[in-house]
Image 1 (cartoon, rainbow, N blue to C red):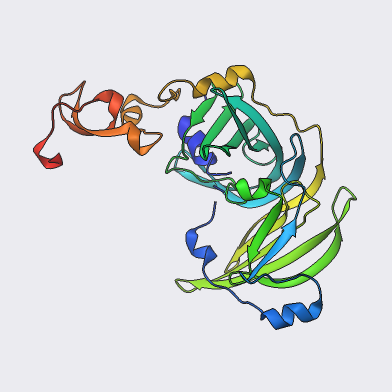
Image 2 (tube, rainbow, N blue to C red):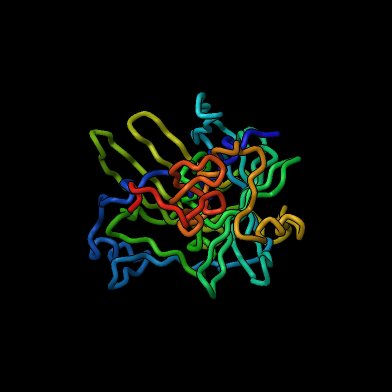
Length: 310
């Protein structure tokens, strides 16, 4: 059975379509409103944003990407840089009587996550989010939030903004370079909006390029990041508007029933510490050892408190 730590390390997308750091969204080179208007390419709104009209959420639409430079951590010891393919789908699933829409990521050849499917799903009425992880010959895992070990897939690039009728880019953060018609590997020709951001962090020069197109189901055409001489990117190779069926079945969705999904293969001590949400955790006495403990409330006797918790 695949080590669960590998699974948890790999799912951090979808956070980050699917992982980068907050500092990458600081500042950036920008052009004035007057300069952009002179190009007569787009209209800059009073909020200093560029709005790209798209197709919105279209069930079964899909996009295939080439990914490069996303590190995969194996059991916390070895880091391997992968170059491979990722299939992204727009899906809709009924979970516990509620309809969720979202994005599924399927690992393809060379990605390091072949045979894995990941989904980030949203209920637009309740603003709830659910994360599904499915691996060959392993039970499906359903989470209410990404664990702190999230990492290894481009989750950040795929979120609710990829499902909306327009994609909004802040010109205070991104320098708009203009529009261009390009040809994908598949031969499809599309129009893209090109943006760039240059920042520094702790002496490191960071260059981000972002290409978007309203003709693509997820908008994303290219997301490239260069930190000094190290580069990682996700690049669109093909897309379509139908046939992108989800890999998750009704049986898989049963994993979302109950307070907390069991995670097969997770050691008992790690299971005691694992919480899907803050509400799942508590402090008190370990029911098994009788010692002071903080962790999943199913394993904690909250009627008995330690002095250090008071």
